[in-house]
Length: 66
Image (cartoon, rainbow, N blue to C red; front, side):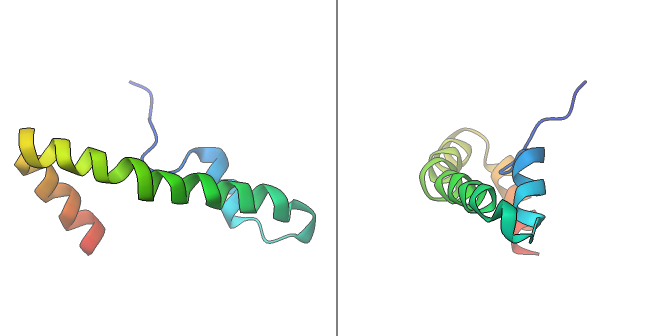
């Protein structure tokens, strides 16, 4: 089975890690995309997990809060 992303795509990871000034615009765009996922989409996912699969939510919290 192929790998899927969590919050960031492979491209997001590469662009956010890149510190060259020539790629600053792409880096900024990647940061903005990830911020949108964290602020807009993640809360919805957490609600679904809380209601329908609390054990999976617990696993997520353990990883994020470590």
